[in-house]
Length: 333
Image 1 (tube, helix red, strand yellow):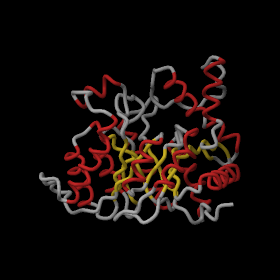
Image 2 (spheres, one colour):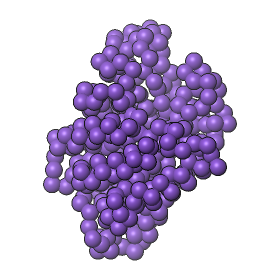
Image 3 (cartoon, one colour):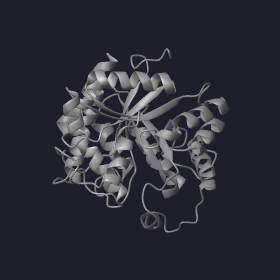
Image 4 (cartoon, one colour):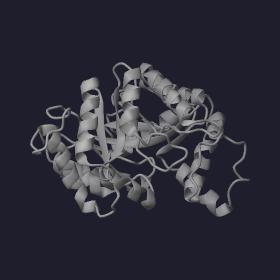
């Protein structure tokens, strides 16, 4: 069994700033501040926000702005992106944005990068004004961004140049795993929504890792969905919010985060139920009491030997969401 336990590896928070049914993005930002402040007292290592667009239930589209807001409301916890979708942006703009954040909040800002658009094709076009960029361009974009921070790009990123902003590569396939290994960067795998590819991607990353000025050894983080409550029954009830979200995405009709319901049988067909339950039954989705979550985390650590876990909890009620993270935090004590 792996020597790693959640007593000696960091646990972190992934926040999508969910917009609740019957609420507004303004309230979402207040909820994120409240969650971040509590997560810091619970002992979580970092708090990441994810870039999405054209999603009525996700308010973190202007990711760097929200990172600054959360960093200003907390004290020591690392705040960052999980991630910024680099193909949507000019590398210089990201260097300047995160250079600004790193200047305002020294040694607290992480820059996690993804290569997916984080949206549909029409919205990607509206963001970029062109769809000519290819997957093959992503490594060049990352290198360009690194050069801006290093001051070797020809054009100067001010602020940004000379700052040590940790760059992570994020992914749900082997592409970013391979690139992270080649560049000697930390790697975060989106196992919370791509569980089947997790072990293969982690092996690819570790087997091909090349030491760099950044790191001597590989460092891998995995994503985990956790809905924790004081009882298994309460957690299963709260988890119907996440199930409704998965259902709306599968239907191509994303919506605001819905309140939990007593029975999901009335909202989906048998085929939809099978698909959603398959996702809900993933080992990277843990639903239950503290002991149930503990057992699930122990199993994941044994199988993945992750260096860190980042936890996503799509729970409608902010107090129940905070309680879920509190329960996980108690496992770290």
